[in-house]
Length: 258
Image (cartoon, rainbow, N blue to C red; front, side):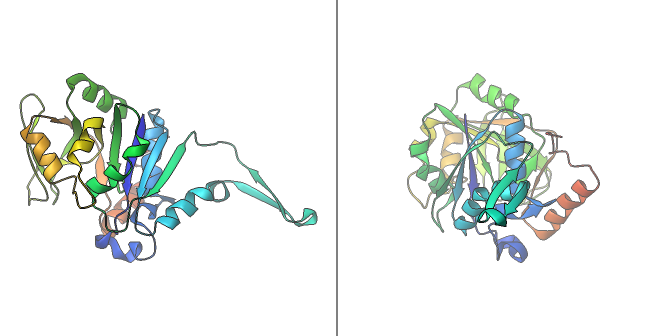
């Protein structure tokens, strides 16, 4: 199953870092947050990724092109014309497709642009700036069990994010983007979509979190999988520092692969 990573935004709330690199390449513990998210999925057996790039997209392509140089020991033999030998102990079992989905394309438009790479009945989607300790296999099992078009992961957190009204059967009754909330259920990303989602994504201006999600909720086609564990986005420099602190202290709940 493919995992689509939304990694094209400008990261305007963390300009101290995003001025120089795409937000998903901002490092936590020496590795981009995008890498941390991919390691989460890989731990649960999801190893095929489509990255929806945009802002400074060439930097994301260059990072993966030089992955072995960044993570391995290298021998440069100048006695043999500069021959290079890469030494490594482990190769990530990843297949990564990086797509330039445009500089100003909205989230729904970015997913629409990668439709030609999706051949399965369902696929997973998340943002390139949040980590969690969610059991991704259980999320997928929940999605398959209800037969609806879309599943999102909800968490309880006091933040300025999209708020949700959840019914007794875990269906999403209403989706309201970025409402001031106080300990309400919010959309944490980590979504699963059936191919029918593409019918709700019209063009580059389509914002996934607005009309498509709102319409799916009205039609009873949007379900919520509630996660009661750890989740944290990285919208601000303070949040980046908090994630760095967790790693430094050896208390990083999202590092399920270690």
